[in-house]
Length: 260
Ligand code: ADP
Image (cartoon, rainbow, N blue to C red; front, side):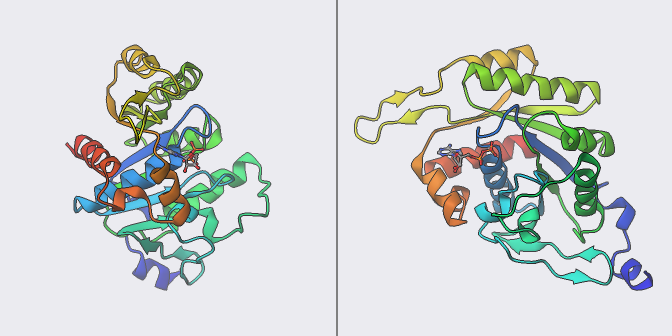
């Protein structure tokens, strides 16, 4: 205990000076995790010290997207974990402790326990931003984050599909109830730009995100196109924000807007 305290003097106050940004969505599959890892990288590229928690304990995917699946972080003493560092970011994910093929069957309190360990027992050091990739929806974990970290801010990820933006609104409502600041919306899979003719195709429709932003009195921080490279880079563990690609510049703009 003595050693842990020495190694980890600010155990109780780790995030007082960091901006904590939770990234959530109404439903799964809209690209929330993809957006979170790319945003983390874009912020790190601008020189910020960034930590990333995969708070989707059951449906973890951050470690695969960051190329560190199955890599275990170092543990010091009884309960102090050193986060893995990859692409300039400190990362912690259940993907380091469980394998992807074995289902995790946990009850709510255990999930919240794992999240608290990620928050309290990980030696994050000095951070400018801590990003949390929330599980989709308005379950225990998003609620725990909003209650335990009163200075957390929320970003909603949605596609322009009305069904997705509608459920995203529920998470915003939860934020409002817990007095968590809504930073804005990131629209993902906004359009597909045909590589042959250059025309934009609005696969998931158009307009629902603007409507949601208006309804929630918030702004759209950026719109990410549907792009095969986004998916490929995530699958390879090298998110697209690392590259010199148009999508990477969109993420840079979003990062600047957030850091303002
Ligand atoms: P969620 O976290 O919302 O469940 P993911 O981030 O896991 O969603 O994304 C779901 C799938 O869609 C992944 O295979 C991911 O690579 C892909 N994807 C996400 N955003 C894009 C995009 N803008 N263009 C192409 N594929 C994307």
